Amino acid sequence: MSDHRVLGVARAFGFIFAGALVSTMAFAMIPNQFFIVSEKAVVNAPVNLITSPIYGRIDDIRLEVGAAVQPGFVAAVMSNPNQDQTSVVGLRLEKLDIEERLNNELAALDQRRDRLTLIDVQIADVKRGALEELASIVESANSNVQYFQAKVNEQQALVDRQQTLLDRGVIKPESMAPLLQQKAAAEFELQGAQGELKRQELLRSLFEQGIFTGGQSATNILSLELQRKTLAVDVEEAETEISQMQRRLAELTQLLDGEQNRLGGIGAAEVKVEASGQVVSVEAAYGDFLTQGQPIARSLDCNEAFVAAVYSSRDVADIEIGTPSLVNIRSIGQQRHGRVSKIVRYFGKGGEDRYFEELPEAEGHEVYVLVELDSEAEDGEGAGLVETDQSKFFGCHVGEDVVVSLGEPMIEKLVRYSTDVAALVGPYLGLDTVLSTAQASDDPQDATTATVARVTY
Image (cartoon, rainbow, N blue to C red; front, top):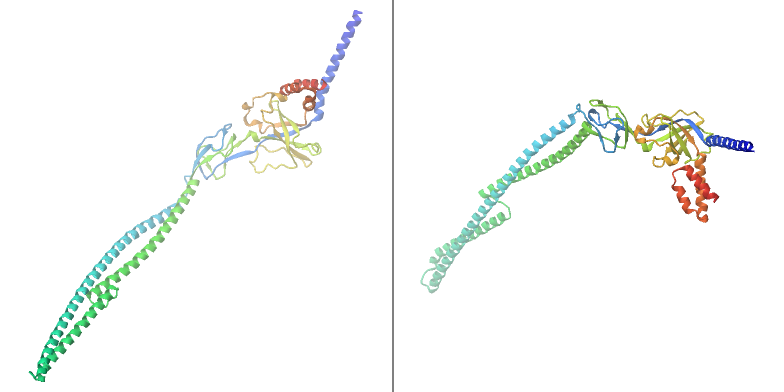
């Protein structure tokens, strides 16, 4: 009996071992049936060019392969020792000429203005003197009028006395003739004096109004007024010319500043990085002459890395955007998770330097499937990947050939489905605490076991 029992136990363990072996092989083969694999795939990323902003020579370069750069970092300093300064020299000479002429004109204008002020003072002095002279002449003429008026009155008194004597018969009528003649002469002189007084008053009135009728004073004033008008015209012309010179000087200053800024921009420049990333190549060295736009270095951002895989159109007809994928990096045996971001018939690389690596060749019936890699924080040990320190791999594997598998492993799919089911039925079965514990677990097998346990409970 004991031999039969031992034989039965041995057979039972044999069957168990065979079943376990068959199950292991089956589970090892089943996931491949759910993957669409492509070996024509490469990790790629857009390349940021660090180019020369001017034609010139590199005086200092601060780049090396593998260095991390940030926007605003001064990668190099350049200058152009062969810069043409002809335009600036011409503008400077013209500006100096206009400045010299302007200074001379301003000095001459000041002299003319001073002379004009002096003439105005002279005219005022001459007018004041002439008016004082005319006032004295009018006063003298008025005195003459009063004198001749008194003389006429005197002759009239003599005539009246003689007339009284004539009326009394004391004298003869013939004695009246001389007195009448003297009276008439005095009246004539009075009329002349009154006329002279009116003439002098009229001359003074006209002079006060700026009307000069003659005389030495009028001649002097007219001469000064002519000089004043000539100087005023010269001052006005000088002011107009100075205004034109000042406008031209302002234009030249603006042109010169613009030209200096332009030449400064092409005569010397700092090469600044515009995008963050890692330097993958340095194509210039100290002392090299570069043309404007010529690349100095290339950099790329690992956050923009993607995988381009070639598939047959028929194989990916049912693949949707967001489909999980597994990227196997051959060189280090690492696996990265990702998701399908685009499926395109043709994916041109753009310019020659648009991407780091050329895409794999695709036939007419093939398409490009672009896979966006998950971040390393999401792509950790909990996802069943090999733990690898990414910091020691330069360039985040861009340019490496990889194997891309579209789909989701059976165990992970079972975990996901079981978790979804448990999330739905957990509140009804009172398994919220168990569910939270299982979701926090980092081991997929533990999560699967816990989930199955929750569902079967």
